[in-house]
Image (cartoon, rainbow, N blue to C red; front, side, top):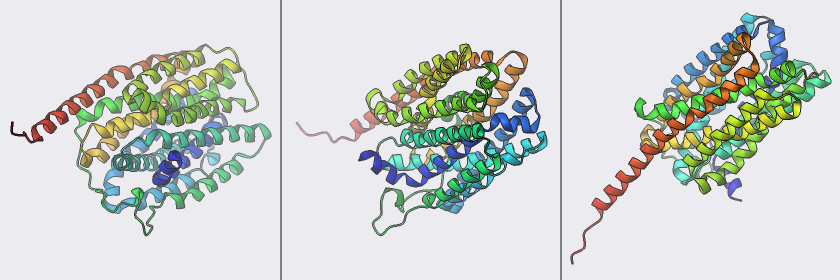
Length: 403
């Protein structure tokens, strides 16, 4: 029942992450068709995805200030925006329209995402244990469900707009859950003592965590955006079955994140990320070398298992490296940098695919995920130093009893 209790106290941000998962799964599932509708090359598609990064960075910069001014009501508003944006992809018919949709997509999704993660970090500080893996598991499971259903819809010949409308309605139905509860008995998610005024966190503290997020998001969205295209084009799989690549990837992420709640306690957060990095590298290599659908799906699953716990666990670590009043700023700044990897991943894959191949692109993903390890070492060293300083302060404050 502990899981149900955790879901109860983090209901609002969990609903926000589920909404993003439903949207992104549908987008990834229809991406081969969207690319054909826009009539763009791999390189052009990759370059246009940079507009999503621009929109995402803008939202990340504004989110902490807007939240400090307008409060918790911004989260359900961001959910409404995501639900409305879900109707736009079927309308894409040119490269200009694709770029415009990607810009709006990046802003709305990033706004909802960062507001959800800041709220989870605040609740974690109160309950005293990690909630990130559980909440991000819901995102991944929602993405897997959405991508899988979109693959079935494409295979069955269902119209794109009809599929998008169903996803939009599902997201809008989640919006009431994003509202902050105010029952007679105040619970964790309803504490009136929240300090929404965020003090700025030092960039030197934020950068190692931001680098981990950047590398992980790059690997994640590279697989979600290009996995279906790689399977259908490189391996010759037809009939919309390529959508099961992102679906398998997201399903593995969701299951791993559910286990991450327990693994974080068993291994510790730093060790958990270190082990996960090696799984991600192996999965990317399998995708790069796949010659059939089975190997490709297994590689996508292994890569999903690897990157699954990195972002939520890194969020928890980032929140622990700064004082409470700097937590919102630290997470927002780390995500402002890190989340650009989510949008740079597709352009990176597009350029490598255009000049070499998608196999080479996934091979480079394997190399890049290993670069998380030195960043993780810097965070671990800072946490250890904080622990020693805290122990020293406690020892000084302890009264000396007379002999």
